[in-house]
Image (cartoon, rainbow, N blue to C red; front, top):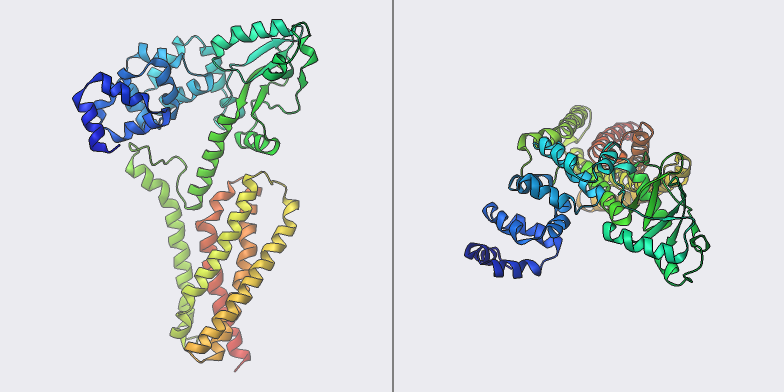
Length: 449
């Protein structure tokens, strides 16, 4: 629907038409609607949705929009909505209050929530840990129950949990024993003990584990959920696949943004961010690129007076820099992607290093031969062709090698290797290629004269 048509619906103020339109939208589409219409119509949407419907869209808001929406609501209404949220979503939104300018409202809501102890526990863990993303609402069954007792227990808990995917079996101290699938319960005899269909747990995590490690565990073993236990095996909560999917998307976004030297805190949807803050966040890599370019330019000054036909040779500098930079960046992205997928052992990269060097060498040979033939065709100078082609062979193979070594070095130092995949590798390859080019020109100029 066009923006003008939407505007007419809300300007008319006919509640039935607005309600009918909203009924056709899923939660994500309702969120998108807030970005399309004017802020003056926000209250109309909020009044047209039930508390449980608002609870579905609140976790989908960017921080800026979340603050604008909650500014329009009174504390009592916010508390009603928060009571419909799962503990992990509630904790996430309260953190948005604390990160913004509404910390007092976050504290008020947290104190009023009936499940505040669970949310406070989640918020006590570091932001990048498994504990900060777990939900404490889990379906529990006692190890001594029969199937019939288990069914009754699941029915009672379903009213509170709202959805049940799996039931965890615990002892009297809430120590995790195993899990049961709902279909196994349905297909079992009502008089059988629950222990008969309890499956031992192969995978579980502690709340201190890093979120990216949790995501790798989900991906590696194709899991839909993971229980979270403390050091004594007491069940604290669970992490579901939809929570992990958010982490995977966030990590991928961070890597992409780091690759181009942009802060991971930036978002297209967050229109209230300070322009100055965004500019300052991007500026450090710009400074690095300026410095690297100045060094590269300084190296180029050695062409003047030291190289015969300097202008002709200098005309090939962009070609050499671009091809070398592309090869280095490709290798850096390959190794960074490997780290993101959980390949953390440096010993297993010996063969990939040799492969990338070999690929770079072959690409350099192909590029060198092609460039040599083109130079021979357009310039008719075999010596220029030899020097440019030799530079391409050496610089491209070297760039492929360093394109992997630089991110590996960052990883070893405990720095995000994605940071090395963009400006650093490109700038390094520029300096490398120009230095090699000048050295090869001077060296071959002496031995071929």
